Image (cartoon, rainbow, N blue to C red; front, side, top):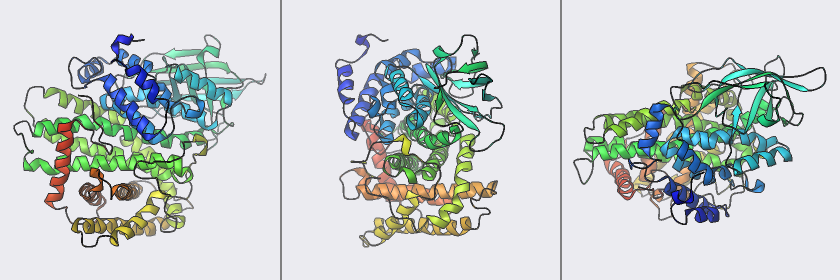
Length: 591
């Protein structure tokens, strides 16, 4: 544990007080306090800053001092639902608290946060009272729990190893098998392990187990050596091997054969959390690009950089609109959230990857003192995002979930389903708490597509004389037309769920669908703020974001006027100079 002197005066008390309430203001307060404790990431003398973290990445070692700080400040409490003694009230509020960590290092955010959430969510969704209590105690005490999924490996790999669970002649459950790349296998106090329970493949082929290493017979569970990865170098990956290892009878989470369904139900939230938190990881890269573009200017970057910088900023706002809407939907309409939330992970990873490519042109051309750090941050993030599931392998996994549902959505949901309730956009005030037990897999509902039609109609009928709003209406109608075209094409997919579709056509359908629901989230966020005093009430950012989405989707729309781009750029520069985040909240950052 770090001594009290390592914390700013009063910060420990403030964190405890902020943890006592569970609304948006409290979550933002906890995020700000955590950001303060971690210090200015650009300060080369900060032990929790970019200089120290990139050195740890280069040396392939975990940043132990920063991990201790996160443990002692109670980050684990954010992963435990309020009903079990923690501070987890809603997934979108958890996202806000995770962002200061992801801003500094994606691997740190995964290892100290989301990796445990992947595992614990299975227990919150289907665990017994005893299992939920033990996991809550572990996380509240600063420990870790990790998940072992079947057939998955980091950094885009496909694992051929795994585990099997069988019932021995004496009636005991026995575990066999091995897996070589598990995050924090050697440091976790518990595992949620998915083991094959039969020879047949299918939805009931795996069961989930909650395992406490201390309760297993000595010598029958063995840790395997650490494994190096191309990304997430500050994370610790090693393996596990079980050899005819009896497991306690109360280790089963949920019903036998329910493991795959539990993973699909809960992973939608956790993967969306990773994608949404990764927006904060791009923040310092965009900040460095703005610094590079204004190094010889006290005013605005060169005109040739305007559309790049403003466009990436608009993309980050669009990504955040999508992530927060989907994470709120897990509380408000959990039965309608699955496919749009998977699409959010898919789209955000693509947009962030494109953003890094665009920013590399600006950062790569910079020739100034200290220019090595921005290029190092860019290179590190380019490696880390795919390893965190935000690359080609992650996209393929998302497509495998989305494509089989498109025919059902086209025939039963689009242009039929009612709009979602109020509270989905904006600050989400008054939303119910997240209940993991209510999360569903698939279904025939799509709350974002339902919102798109209503939003386009409202914008068309409001303030017709406003030129910028009229342009926003044209963009909304363009995406509405794209949804109609998708409906006709997806209705023609073969099979009851379109499962026979694969290859480039399936990928194109997923791409277009993801861009449509992203546009719906942008429109919903702008509408929620339309009459407010924040920057989000201005249409410029929504027009630029929708224009860029439309060009990606191949929808013919006019380019946004230059003064629209300039307006977004002005907000970007204002936040840059004021040290504010480049997301929807725009909170002040430690610097």
